[in-house]
Length: 466
Image (tube, rainbow, N blue to C red; front, top):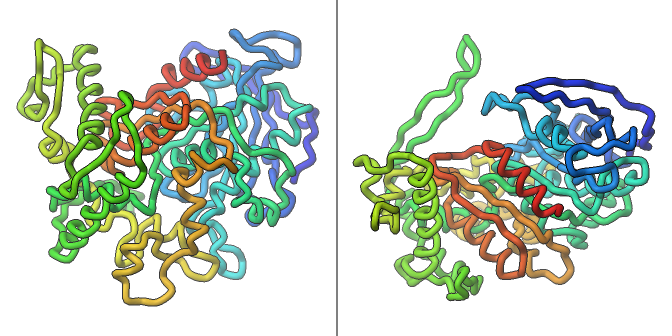
């Protein structure tokens, strides 16, 4: 663990899109005493220079500034600390730059992920490495809080895809003893790791039930369409790939779809009106209507903002007095289109990113759902129950031994096909039931992406920080 020297920084000035930020950059801070990977288990901290001169930035001071903690994990692969600059996906200023311009202190940790190996060939980034690393980073921040501006009781995490899932895990599992042995092994600081708020873009989470949810939504779609990357002489190339599920995959789809109502009903969730959310054996019921309501709300907002939704491709939308009032769910899923063949997450071939996430030091890929492990005739293919548990935030939201963040912002694109809409809807409903303040929406026209609405994100941060 790096001993923090508040005088060891780089003074930097950056300008973009009419904004100039001047800040101190503390880079390559090791947040654990015994790192397993010195490249990824580091953090960069950026602090507006104004705070060292008794000045305010907007409404914030050195004492009141929120601490924004973005991660760069995607696909459960390792992520390096993020730098202020331009987002390569949106070609706009990134969240780190925007946060600094608004007066936030930014703590950008790296984290291990699947595929990492050490010099002995052991896999070092399998679960729960990624979430343990981010928890250790929070503990380090609190450990050095006396030497830094910023309110360490206002830590707000942010991530996209697997990074969004990790943001959710950080929000749900604060101070849980389940992670303590892993944190101690790394020499993490003896501090709390709960956070104030979690921003989650398209979180690929609830993995042990993700195949059930995916087939509940896409069981009628046997063709799938996705983009794949391949190397060419000119470098990486992205191309469309269209496929058709095999009879065996269709049978997997039928079987796991039947399991979803039992899982959903067992959660005993309620909607905003207090009505029980449930499904019958065919997958129909109040939960399906609840999911539909968020798609309808997204269409309504898009129409109010001037988007033309009257074309034939939107014939699945029902209208009343010129306003979207309902959707045909099956036709909507056909419009969105299946992206992944069954089983999308815990495949029988054990070749998905998630299968690799649940490997161990010696085994690269393992199962993490009861269904796939039961169907696979090979022995010892299922990850340990504790590892599966601690990678799912749903297991901690109502756990008295974990401190769940009070504030949440969850965004999942209305045409994001990487996981079922049921997954973020379930997460949001569970949080609301526990009294959390949840800002949840399915933004119209967006697929699998994040940080596309930074103005709205930071207005939310300002609201919850008072």
